[in-house]
Length: 166
Length: 66
Image 1: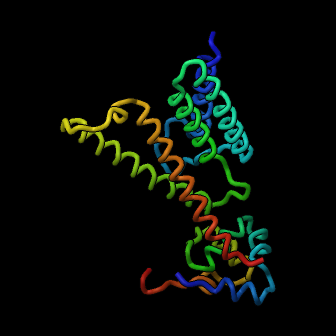
Image 2: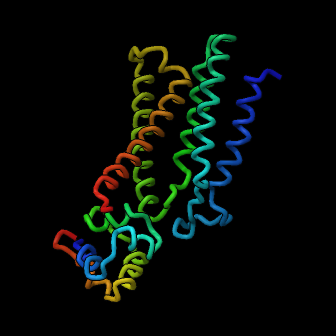
Image 3: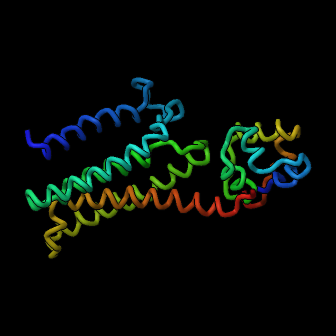
């Protein structure tokens, strides 16, 4: 099996495991007050950075062999951003939990509304560039949304850190 | 919501870091509460009141906008 086929397969298996980790363990309850989001441990942040580095290195080989590596890079970068975003901070507490939730909500709103807007444009037969008709566009926009969440989160933390007393 | 966290810390001679360690949160959390950027949960407010040995409403106070 080609390595560039195997790598996304490994990613898919990992993703099933990762989602299983995040999802509630409390069985069939839909009571959000009883559910607690199980974040990944802090070291998963390093894992996601390593995954991005490996992806970038592999993408160079892929571009020289097949010429098209955009989707490969987008999927793997999205996976890394997802893991990074849902990993605990070193000093995780209710404050960082709330920050993460707010950052996610704002980027989710922009992601969903942009896709609805795009769907409307597409349906109304307006001329839009070809890239927007491809699934890769959704992948890229998802990546931007995840990146936006991280930027919201860390800018707020940075601003708070600036005011901290020694 | 107003709070007297900074004053209470000064009375007890605690830094933000000391208080953060005592109640098991980050320094950012204490700083954000002091600057009224973040409203702590009831659990956290009670932990803070235990450290300062004062009732919660002696440390935190509602404002007209709340």
